[in-house]
Length: 454
Image 1 (cartoon, rainbow, N blue to C red):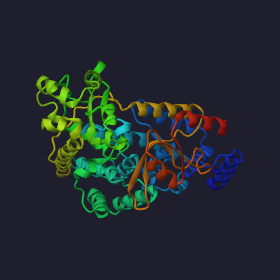
Image 2: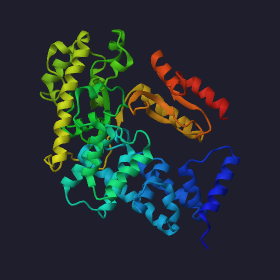
Image 3: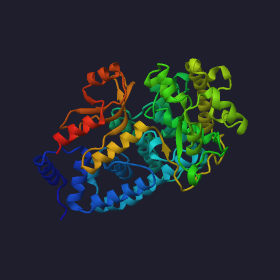
Image 4: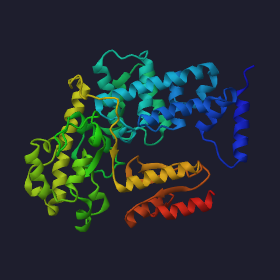
């Protein structure tokens, strides 16, 4: 006999609460499923482990949301309560397969081939809903390109940055009403005004900025070349060149010595993706010193990264002018590439993508954050959200937190926490204003965790 979902919902909630942990909607949904199929948790974990090995770290709640859309075309977990357990069992491998199709197109056409540059994972769920509406098969590559055009703009303009469930419901309703990708794009235009990328949009800083994946996308789709080896930076690189690194065009310590702030030093316009060997070779040289060498060694390679060729801009004292000029070049390139994607005029095989993933080493600070996430995971605690966007009441990004727990270490039961490394007092005050307890030292944070969650 089929046991009532409602009965097990109450039992699961009671059991977990007695242990001191509050269930999220996703936790509760999984508890309902496990009440009839105890192996469900391990089945889902196995799927997530497979994605992790491919370079993508998805949460259980996200995958449950994807299963819900696969089965019902809706984002609401309660829609799962009407599903027979056999349908859910069958949906897990099928959902994995369909997500893989989306990720493959995102990687092969846009070059966004791992989790750090994926943009917004909830846009993938909307893509899943659109594929479902088309019986899982799009007519041609142009239709895929238009969907990918929407996908890029969805993460650029923070479509799911707040009120995720309601935004998903709105977009999936457009799809069910037959509005298709044109309807999704129109929705973005209505909230944005237009989808033209301006040079100011590249003002963002650090790897958490929404435009960081776009910079990676442009590098890949433009077939940009490494300055030292002249190799095209695609995902088929092997050996010592297989790991790309984010290169600060103007070295960080030189800029800090010149009195520049963290946000200005880590401006996206000061980033370029290079092989590890070239990044090490350049080391801490000034642009005015190393630019001429690489321009002569690999003609055109620097230009393929939209580096201004005016040598007056290569000096530390003209750093802000360099950023301004490069932002102009990046905006022009972005509009050209994305417009071509929308019109279907872009090359049929924009990127030669192999099965190998091409990981990007970012900064020492990011490595610290990754180690802290692992430290939390080993203790069975919430790992937190790296590069979390702090959103104001109007939906604007007002800050990027190195690591954050916007719902608390224990979901809904503890205060908001943030890690802020090398931030100004103004940033700290803003984070505090929005209800976060923050730590500027990872060691102090670990002491807090050890004493509070021992």
